[in-house]
Length: 342
Ligand SMILES: O=C[C@H](O)[C@H](O)COP(=O)(O)O
Ligand SMILES: C=C(OP(=O)(O)O)C(=O)O
Image (tube, rainbow, N blue to C red; front, side, top):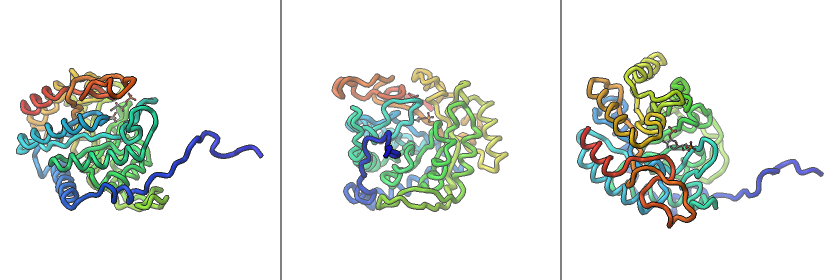
């Protein structure tokens, strides 16, 4: 008989169930209390009740826990220093969407060598998220694979649906069940409509296929996530952080019956993926807010210990400590100076 299934599958290895990993790397009452408090604080900023500026800041991706830890320790100090005016949330991104192919993040390939040891990646992600929370820093991730939230969402305070998945029904449904505020990026081509449709879908109750805590395929029914919002990140036609683009986005939200609130990413297509342009983009976003654009509730920055980005090396040891292996980041000194300045 000809073979009809699994023609292109070479392995199919069961994962530990989410509840097994959660027992192994548990969430304490203190972690839970801090996550709930941070999500509420972020939701209050989104609602305009808390007037602080929300800044999602940190490495493009975490690939080295030692450097990530050092970054988190520094950011915790800065967050405390500026907390009367800004709510700093650390980017703790473990999943990377790729335009074509490339390293897909620490969860997918924790050893950075193509061995794709996902169980280890999930363990590292949970462990690191707990460490960041213990420093008193809220955590931000992109939720990319729809199975991942079962393993890490309880330690996550804010999430993004990225530009490459904002139009995906799977991701919109997933967002409708997430417990934290979720930002939808405009699409890579620049479409804000795709993200607004995403927000509308995520705010509604949904029923879809997922997994439960035991790791079993299941039917998931959600309430909808009211704390869904828009993120402008620029697109193929260029940046969209200028007053005109921001005004159009706010008007489009209102036309769709949504709150006119927007976060603006100072990285990605809003800086042409050139970290040298990121500080001025950020300054312009803050200038508009200071000039009265209260619809701008926050911004995103890609920042690391060392500026720029490096190509994946032959071995981990050959990598520059504290420098991104995905998109370019501004360095720590620039980050501190910029946040203190604004
Ligand atoms: O934020 C990171 C990148 O912009 C995203 O993962 C896409 O990267 P790529 O276009 O290099 O694949
Ligand atoms: C991939 C990211 O952003 P975007 O979806 O805007 O490309 C990111 O923030 O890591």
